[in-house]
Image 1 (cartoon, one colour):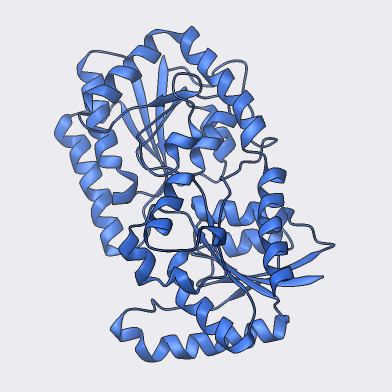
Image 2: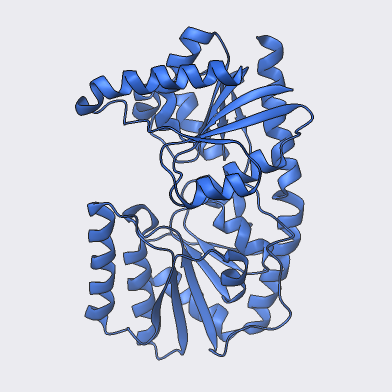
Length: 364
């Protein structure tokens, strides 16, 4: 078996990146590969991996570029190299591009190929800043996320596009709504500026002002950082400002996402990510903005709609349109499930990643 070392962005919580990493390491061909996941902290994701019988180690990897990490980062890199040696790693794969410097440190000493997964839309400056040119392989989750890599001078042969996946057995459509409200619209993700929950509240206020009996769910919670806690307070203050407390609800972090998705009639995403695939698999229409992988995951007019964030009236009007026409909403959801089965299966995703590994291992 080929031992592979994985670096996870987080061990204490589960976001889209962690879900995708779990799909990979839980379904990888264990007759061919032997995974070991390194988490920077302990918690629900690390425990999830352990329960799935995926070997997991906790190793804090401080931000490489911060001045205060100057000493600790080299100690951490040395520990990482020793872990890679102990695992006899033949390849190292980071699920977070910000760990690229750590990969390079391992590569220099052990002479093994390194792979960086691009889950966010980067700028060419960020591509150069995090030294993607030093990576042997790069996996981008969309063609759009591939573009800045090319613009920054990265060899196109190094880049493979592998879209996010979803567990099609776990996320299933239901024949009847499992809620009593007329129509429920949700946004899913950590409560943080990148996910734009404040804009979601503004959209909800626009809809509610039209007198529509529509409920809005904010699914997720904030991390314990000052920035994220401050943002959550701002979201709550905005709800109070618009006086929509009766219609906008915080569900908190959900560990039962398939059920949480079934409770919705419509998903709105103002960032991107694997939640789009989850909603489609659950037979829900999706409204997204033209950012990141969204435009490549939603088939406009068939499985959902791509609507610019500004002005927010466009998204608000589309929500009202779907809430008024339950037949149209259901039809789009059904098309989403069909498309998810064709495009977002875990087996297809894992096979494409394994193809990347084989290409690099042969070259090595």
